[in-house]
Image 1: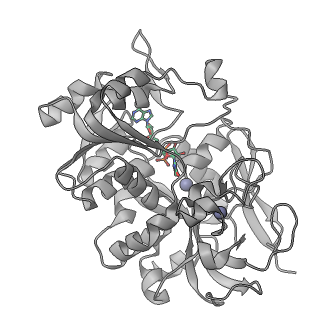
Image 2: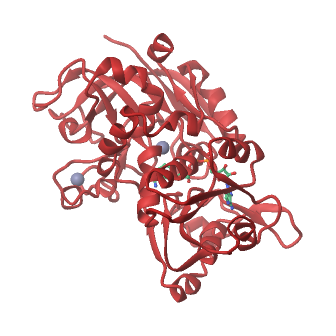
Length: 400
Ligand code: NAD
Ligand code: ZN
Ligand code: ZN
């Protein structure tokens, strides 16, 4: 019997690498399936979305195996898998999608209707997303494999660019979706809230879509310095909270065409006495302020329906003090939700393979071993300017 190890969530601020079951061709309900593959995981990333769970800000159960950003090699395939072969190197969209329901057929794979018995949308290793086992592990099972997986055309070339290609499972398509839904195009002025990996990916997406200028705001100095180094205009929110003025300092005008929320519900803001406090609606409200009339706001930043760690009672159920009247008065378009990765990953793979999008350098990828994952979680939580990529079999180390 083959063995497996993975990163499990234990309790707030604690994850552990432990022995876990080797994957089987069964769905979370225990039903045997023929449309899956088992992957040897080549790379699997730690995400800001994982941090919401690890900080105890969701209802994630203890013992859950984490990991939704997966790239791997097919080592076994189910009877119904027709178009993938053992040995193929593939990117796994973090969405688990059936490819058969109405929303999947319309391309909205972030809200598949068949892969989660509680609500629309599935993901690996994520609370409320259907119970699919996570891939921060040595091996993982991917269902509906013919539909979900993106095969890299040339394995040797893909391994050379694996630090970039690993970003295709989530953050690069997510940043791109944020920019597309914020209607970024040639000559756009863009403000990105949050200089974490998703914010940097959104900024990179805005640039490749032709934005004239990309501003990126945070209060984390190390992340702002990195954003500047890779060519974006840093907006230092530790100076004060009047975002329009900070935008005007760069553009000469307090508004942008497009804005992208890459922060989500754990956003920080200022209290009346100037202290930094958690302020779950601050990003959305400030984006409505700085987005021009008829502009658009993309919202990949995550918002929850239950937040056990919320400071305010209303926020415990995901209710925010939104000034929606402002956005309404300016005829804003707002777009939320999980990214339908499949809509974008093939084009973005081509952009990487043809050297148009150096995403690993932009998000500052740092490769670690599986055993270093708990440390990686801690440094990422502390706001280090890196995107952690776990290399469970040492395959990336070999090509480096
Ligand atoms: P991260 O936690 O590393 O980055 C968030 C950054 O926001 C931090 O640097 C923090 O200092 C900064 N920040 C806090 N308050 C701010 C404010 N008021 N203005 C500007 N910046 C502020 O996380 P990440 O990995 O970059 O992910 C960002 C968000 O995207 C998370 O909420 C994550 O769950 C979400 N996400 C969504 C999808 C999707 O499909 N929609 C996919 C991936 C990630
Ligand atoms: Zn992610
Ligand atoms: Zn579906």
